Image (tube, rainbow, N blue to C red):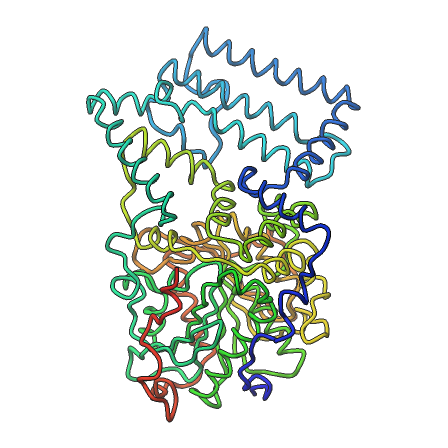
Length: 591
């Protein structure tokens, strides 16, 4: 059942000292220069941007027919806008906002001249899209970089971002007598002071770890230099014999899965008769620069499984991985299958990628030039810090996370109602230099895991060795792990796969408790020996269901569990309850 090697508590390998992987060399001054430039470029490689634009421009210049088509499209757009100005028959007669673009949703945007300004802006964006896509000979990635970066620049000048061209702001100003600007200045000053002190982007208010969030009763039952393992107290008299081990991503604090009691996946699982264990990762600092991705597997998943086996002996485990934690779980599961370890009864992957060839707009930042630039940026600090990661994710959704917030907070003088998810989102973490470099190169850049080149203990692993039943969840609006990317597990694992597609994004789609609001999902199970179903066909065939996918998942887990029995002791036999702290533990409190 459990590999004997997994019962040992590994430690960070002593040979992984800074000198062994980062010798002092003549290029250190170059790396220091790149690290200095990083804050000025938002972490983007100037060389990567230059090469992308050079590729696009060179091919566009050598394609006069395509250039003429672009010019004609621009003239047609201008003519449509002129017609809309002279004969405004109806709003959005020239162009309408794309689905999901909520900047111009308010009714006031149908009034003139605001509607004309919005249409002019949208036509400009459409013209840029036409000019940067479909140019023969431009590499796919360079095309996406040019289109994306230009779109981000144009978004700055959207009429919704300025007080004099935003009818919603004008109406608010008239209604409040200008008090919205006074409150907006206060909001800006509050954010500015917090930025100076490197505080959280927003105060957590009533959402305090261990008091109002992450309050499901439990105990830290194991600790090493990288994780604390939390065992949660049973909420039912009898429990299923197979425990659940949750592996969250270390890019986030674990308690996204244990938010407020009504929003807690952990609480939901315990109330449905499961014994739940959760990994809480330590927040690394500069001295942890050489912690590797392999250390996360051994010190994290391997050590946690060994502790679970000690506490619940003789039982196989339902393993759950979220985001990067799911990718790591896939690596661990493939290695276990290769080595004949059948400790896992099932595997659940939540918004987790195993193939990175279609990893969304994040791949725009992943090429050799960009990865080298990021490595130099991390090399100086030893970690990828919270502001650098937050900035990258905000750029991907700049309309929702940057410009709409500026308008709401500083021009409208409003604040979004605080929530446990917002408080968690402000409680960010760091990532060690070596681990993140390996993650970017081995997974994103080279796609080693999907292609069978990823090494564990010096030998390659293959996801096709996984025969354990899989429950995989993708979310419709995921900018971090697009659902079509997570769906590729169907091509890789030789197992029964139940795939669920639910609404929401990377976080809100996963934190989806029953009864909160109108929800729905699609679900379809592929047998281990069944034919492959592509994502488009999957959409047509998968059954629609109302409610939260959590309920579907619990039924799936129960069907793969044994008869319920008495709960296991907290911490296992012979454990001193005073040796380690109660949940949520101490690692989650590290800033």
